[in-house]
Figure (tube, rainbow, N blue to C red):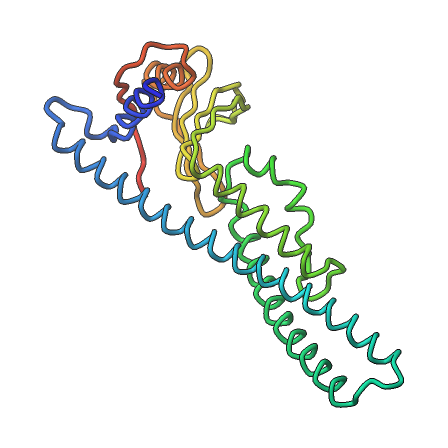
Length: 253
């Protein structure tokens, strides 16, 4: 636990903007950390909204499915019985119609969520996209023309949002091939800071920079002269380097 706290302390210093790297930057550092805390609070609120919507949709679909099944069985029993009362049959039919109308409302919300998921896919980091590819493939091309059941579609959306939420609350280190602005492709280590940003550096420390989601996907600008510091940051995170403060550039939206 002490090691984990120490690692987080080391990484906290990673948010000092490159443009503010000068002597006596205590107050500037505090401002950046305040903005980081505010950003984490916003992420936490959005995550809470995602979880609430997931829970409501999942619970509603489960309830509606069970009720429709129960009413179908009850109707079959009534129709098979010569002594079934027309009043009871009419009441059950009315209940089923109400539940079917409620299910239609849920289905309309699912279509909206499916469209939103498709729009945010370019902003998701590659490691997360690779993990949820089976779920992404199951997103219907046309939400108004699909053979998937309502329950399957809800499960699909909940799965994508759950994995995105999990990725957003952790640091993720991975090895990747990165194409530089010059067109050269190099093997790099990358440390993703949730869904917000990332650092990358090659083995030599010559090529390094940051990454962040842009309008057309993630952007990876190179930062000259910061390879050693970013390498050091990754070593601290992976536990192969001495725990210490590391000053690296950062980007806060």
